[in-house]
Length: 72
Image (cartoon, rainbow, N blue to C red):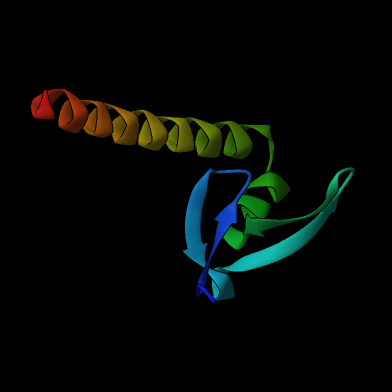
């Protein structure tokens, strides 16, 4: 079994020791401690974490797109 779990909040894989299972309407899901702690802060902290996560996801998507386009 894998030592990582997928965080539904930040959309990344993390080591399971950095994750917690959260009960949602659709069942249990894994969420990283970093994202849980970010939501405990004020609105500015949540928005900053969201922007940071969005930027990281965009950079990863651009990198993957470059690799796919380079193979053509």
